[in-house]
Image 1 (cartoon, rainbow, N blue to C red):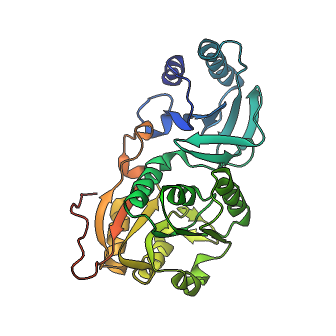
Image 2: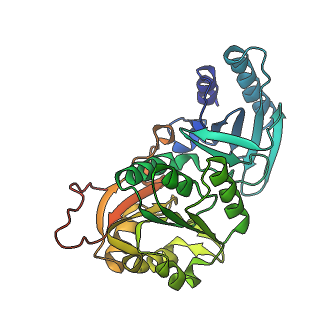
Length: 319
């Protein structure tokens, strides 16, 4: 726990939502189960194993002491979440949580919900992916985007803000898409997005008719019983990409499974859609540094065949 306490003693006051301490990366012996995130004005402390009340009180006291330096006179807001296979819980340890709770990431605003559920509305480790989408849309204004497993539609908000003309968001969870609509409204985006609460595997005809798409984003859960299991279902998605992409269009494939490395996506793509060329693997945010990078989030970019005479991306990186 000492590494976590030392990180707290050096904390800054953050304006954007971000990961502050990533014990899960295996770089801090003795603190592997601890994670600390900033969702201003709230700190989210997570443990992936059971901890004693004394240990929890020690960490919260350290946060309170540091916060008194960073924001004299302001109350500390802290939520604790236990995520353990035998028991999970979420409780407010200090202060309060705004309702609605809106956080920022650069020029974008998102609704989050810390006190309920294990997913909070914004995946912080995907910030580099959202930055890539922003840069891609700025380079290709008017692009059409298909956002599969859209969740609360963070990619869609970024894409439209950066110049996309259309984003089709698809997710089976209607509640998540409802928050996605709120995220668009928060950012003044009143048109360009559609929201389909559909099973992707039953909607290929509709998705193909909505295209062709200049960018297809695929960000599925690694394992969600009855919905998606990466080992058997990812290849089914890859086979559809050539029919969904415009000439020269890009596909962003995401995989957050410690059991499957980037070679899984590369080999499956070679089998399912060999015409798509691997471009690069996006680096994860520095705050998510991992002793074993292949266990961490993988975000791979591919590009479809170009029309004759059109230039492809000039560089190809190794995974």
